[in-house]
Image (cartoon, rainbow, N blue to C red; front, side, top):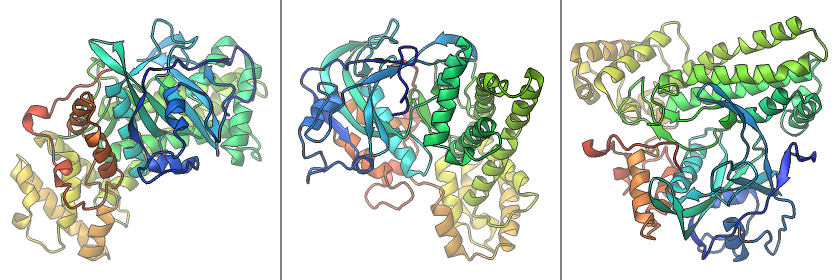
Amino acid sequence: MSFLFSGSDVCRLTQPSPIPNPYWVAFSRSAAKLIGLNLGDDGLPTDPKWLELLAGNTLETASHHFSTPISTVYSGHQFGVWAGQLGDGRAILLGEIQGQELQLKGSGKTIYSRMGDGRAVLRSSIREFLCSEAMHALGIPTTRALSVIGSDLPVRRETIETAAVCARLAPSFIRIGHFEHFAAQGNISRLQELAELLIKEHYPQCASHPEPQLELFKKICERNARLVAQWQAVGFCHGVLNSDNISVLGLTMDYGPFGFMDQFDINHICNHSDQSGRYAYHRQPQIMHWNMACLASAFMPLLQLRYDAQEAEVLLRDALDEFPAIFADEWQSLFRKKLGLIKAHADDIKLIERLLQLMHDSRVDFTTLFRQLAYVKKGQAVDEISLRNLFIDRPSIDQWLHDYLLRLDIEDENDASRRNAMHSVNPKYVLRNHLAQAAIEKARNHDFSEVRRLLKVMSDPFSEQIGNEYYALPPPPDLTKVAVSCSS
């Protein structure tokens, strides 16, 4: 487990609170492979005790016993403001199986629940489950979701809803907030233990570096810079990029309010509680950089063990300044691939930005546009390209298509191979909000068929799935503004 060291200043033993009459809502065979579960023909664990364990009703199955479930303490910045001590308010870490930590989210109160009830509701658990597995299928680093277990136990939010427990997997759930917590306390020994543990278990290449802790900081920054570039490339927005929601392994985690964009809007806000737009689409790289600055502050005491304060600040600032360049390189590489461009040319960034501006001006569907772009052929007449009809400013998109065709002429790939390459990076299927909402509405009536169908569709996002074309369509006009918030 991540917290191999003991002490009440780090974690507390926490027993999950049982839920009455649990039932399967969803289960991921793909995630189950990570921990070697034996599954039956129905795709569920052959050992029935797993239902009770993943509901938080027991701590053992025929093959596993978890004797020390814990909740961990962390602190962090929320919406740019220091929030002080936080912690696992509704997440309980059961233990480790084959290198994966198993955590139950929504399994009852912990010492860090503050005024909360420690529960999660069905709708948020379904959204987290589906998006975790969808992101994995897209090739984007993420925590995984093993299951959703439901119960008719009532839970009060804006209205009365029902409880659910989402079982999550990750090599580690350590966050920036864990470092921030011990730095704020001035607990240097815990900071050292945490850094050494990360290096030993997850960043072994840092151990042989002359400055292992500084190198660790750089690697965490690099992973998160690349992660946010990957989000941008699929039109994904994380609605609450607080420092306590940022993984030190560069994983997408804590799926609360989130959204894949439909109509492209550079200013898109996926969380209607984010009234200032702090976590809008175009600000996400900047905010991730800001979170890395929070981590740099937490690393200061470690570097000051070897350097004076000014030297330590310079070293961390220089490392932090590498973030924008790493992000920009990754972003440009990803969007070149989305356009089917293999060779890098200086004007490519202008070509990409011009297209995004035109998409923004006409509110063109993000996923559909890049998927359709693969069908453009070398030497094709601009007025024969149907996707131009998606744009309001016809002269500008025609000029862009003309320039794009000229750019394709200097590529060696033929149309067929380029199309295949573009389809391998531009998904046909993403977890659109209206699709998730439709599955949730059925699930509220104990019909989980749509949850399971969505899981199957989203598990193969780049393929042409005969019979599932509906799931690739943009939402109808009356469903373009499905709202999500922090309430769960």
